[in-house]
Length: 189
Image (cartoon, rainbow, N blue to C red; front, side, top):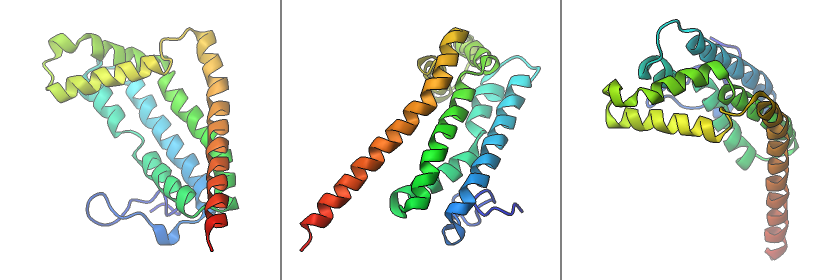
């Protein structure tokens, strides 16, 4: 069992219950590092698969990847919005750009996109259920929209600007939140 409660499996029904009682700002950096590395390994395994790309070994495998990161990000989102303090704000400033960079590394992974594109181009002959075909289409379109078809120079620019943009957006949201908090407290008797 992992030492960090945020990366340990959650016990209980329906996917488990988050360890709210053991959550602290100090847990998040290690949890993010662990979860990002886990998802990177899962994506690398998809890309390295020697079999021809199919819905199951590419799109479905991607859907199953990153579950630990998803759980840690959800916990962080709740903590950031509801237990907001200087520790969580510092974590947000530090980790939002890193999380954006990790997401970009997946979207801009040429080997992964080649597999996604192969599945997308074989949709007419793949005999997929409508929901599977829709997921394959949405995945392909999302990757294209987010820059997977960019040339190397465009990808390098996206890798540079995306984390900076994410940092600025988190700063804007934080300032707006603080402004609203000041206004609402000024209205109280």
